[in-house]
Image (cartoon, rainbow, N blue to C red; front, side):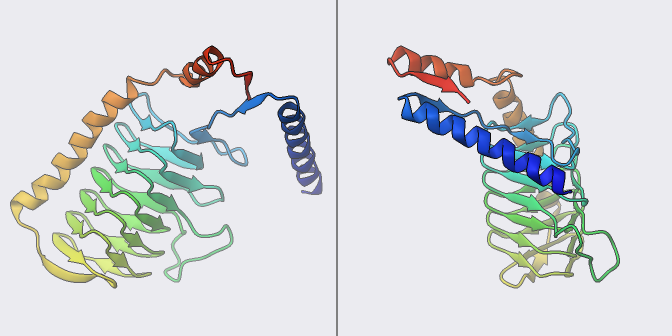
Length: 236
């Protein structure tokens, strides 16, 4: 453990020293963001039709099913022993955060503190999910919070800004909202159908974005623009 810490510290020191020397020499440092990061040997799993936005961060033990998408500035962080699953045709929208409790944490229920997002789930922009279970066909509005141990059953809508307390259960076929979350109404057949339609529409948009980004990234375009302007730039 001490050896790994020393290696990491030395590596960081060398990188920072190199960056400082380049900056002192008048060279602008051009850093490429990594949307997917292997952490402690755990590499995110994605399929060919999974869209991970260039500014998103998917870290560690994360499994992305087919047609799933993680949008701009969203963070899916499984940097401990607890995994995260993003289901088929589900989406984590702009600036949302999906994570788990600390490595040594335990849920009162006795279940592992993983985070499970089922199929055809839309997680709204700015929402936060922590060690919870979201079943299939759920629409989570913008800036919602679902805390550890909570269960959101299938065919559920959460109004924007809803806070689902730890270990709460949202029953199937209902709409909830508020802080803390309270029952609003049963979903109509049209509302239930809209949940899947929305997830599918977001996937179609994701495919359009996916085709805009080359597999090895397009940061070289920005680098070329900087060089055309006479800036001495290096990709770091």
